Image (cartoon, rainbow, N blue to C red; front, side, top):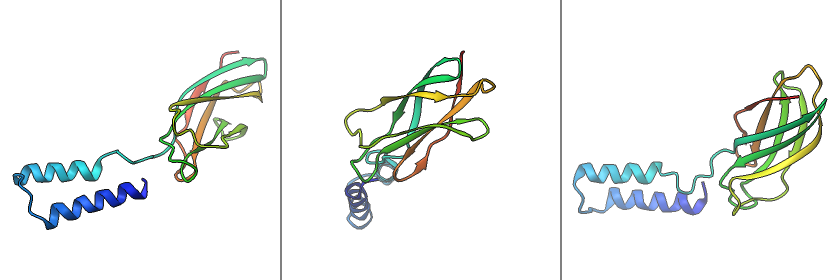
Length: 142
């Protein structure tokens, strides 16, 4: 969450608690709850929302779609990895800049060697603040 949002929410909280406002008590607490848990300003963790895999024998092309509310260079989706189900790293795509105005976004990685015995892989995104995402499981068609 950006510092400006933290400041805004803490200021609203102080105003709600210190200054009398003309809301009924129940409405005041509902308003307060919405302010404190509002997702506005939360970048949160990166999420893998889609993967297209095209394999020819043991060589695969992966097109991975990520969603993350990038906040510039301090907090952005900066990588995704392809792993076997056992955790062996098969490929890595590094993202060298934020995608603030392009969400969700898709990037590809070709030439990934996936041994013949592997029929499922996991794709894991990463952001510069929260680290790695939950795995997204992909069934390979060869």
